[in-house]
Image 1 (tube, one colour):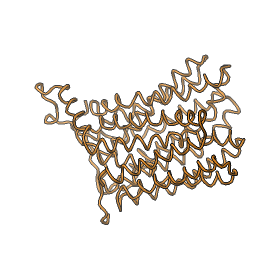
Image 2 (tube, one colour; image 1 turned 90 degrees about the horizontal axis):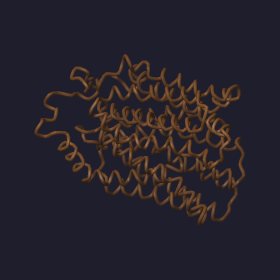
Image 3 (cartoon, helix red, strand yellow; image 1 turned 90 degrees about the vertical axis):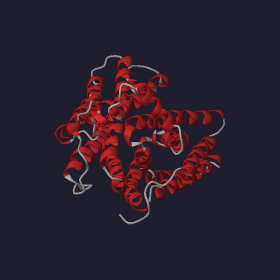
Image 4 (cartoon, helix red, strand yellow; image 1 turned 180 degrees about the vertical axis):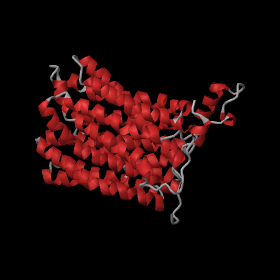
Length: 416
């Protein structure tokens, strides 16, 4: 259990760009994203070296997502049971260990096992850092804090693949070793600087009469009420839309529909990344100053409109230039919503059971991410690509509508 004396409240003098936040939040975010990006271009080639078919090889993506999905609820309960700090430190450590082991594998099943562990570990890091921010950062700074972290991750992803490609050219296993080293290095400052963020006192301990079963049943009764159900519904639709937008499905479509090569695909990713980073940073300021809905609702609505345009390019077989315009439009609109559902979820989470709440919420999100590319591919294969894009547009619009109409605003519109 977390100890009473470990609690570290936020101080108003600790700014968003303080040494503490730079070393324990932003630096780990960018380094972990950099390491992940370095390993990314090596993974397909490494997988192919085992002499397996494309369908079997795709399991390296599926098992990673599955590990992340299955980690959500257990991690949430551990956050409340063991405290935030232990999970925050253990997640990147486990990521590093799994990456080191991936560099040593001699068979495809071994690779799948370590990819599953890596997905589980990444979810531990995501939920623990979210819980720490929710515990220690007040609502008037939470938007900038979270979107700043997401923006730093985007910067790391921009640089990683280029470095990873160079390293893989020398030795296909080296990028995984580098990923492991960076994962461990990223968390080193947190060992000395991060303290437990949730106080555990005798008054908060469940009595024998209550027991864990009664506490758990109370939690489930609470989150199955409004406004949590509305928020979970919005998150599910948002994840269905984003799962294909963030998972590489659009780039795969460009490769098949327009016969694009790796240079164009890499260029599209780089350009949209450069455009998206300043949008992500500015959205945090807007959320803290004017309210969460000021970016969430327009962001998902604009994404839906861009996806409708994208559907028309597929239906009418418009030029590659027209699709690129739609692609940049959609990715820019998505950047406006990057990290915003996390901020809203942190605002809504019950203070007494944030870890469990985050676990259930992230499970819903991961289910959406897992289903999205599968539904997209099924509709494209059985009917048409245009219907796949219309499906994503509907999900994005539904997310905007549910947040706009059924989820309450958590921050007022006054000055900070």
